[in-house]
Length: 156
Image 1 (tube, rainbow, N blue to C red):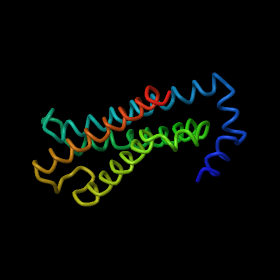
Image 2: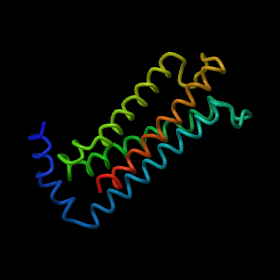
Image 3: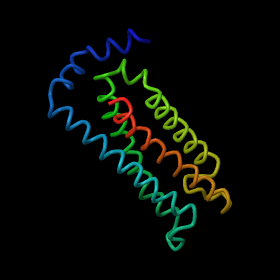
Image 4: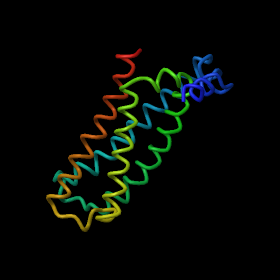
């Protein structure tokens, strides 16, 4: 895999991103904003699932925030991929980066499994299951954010 990472980080796109302060800054800003919208929208729904704002209908809330979260996820993946290729070999070797990617995969797999099993709005889940699902999602996505942020401090 090292050859793949090296090829990625020496590609014309990666070199351009790394050499242009404004391009890199723009991509990094887009990544942070996408993550903020992603986690913010997920937290809104998860907090409702664990019992906050019970007067809000879960189905209506899900119809509002799920498309926002999906769009933000797409933007985060694209901007994160662009940031990754600039230092692919280094990032791929970082334990925290690997942990972050693993937690994202787990969170997405959990989300897909939960929605398939209980419906998009978790209408088939019991109150206790909603609390567990919401709590697990909050913990996973917050851990993703912390791991991503810590990469800069531990490996920066």
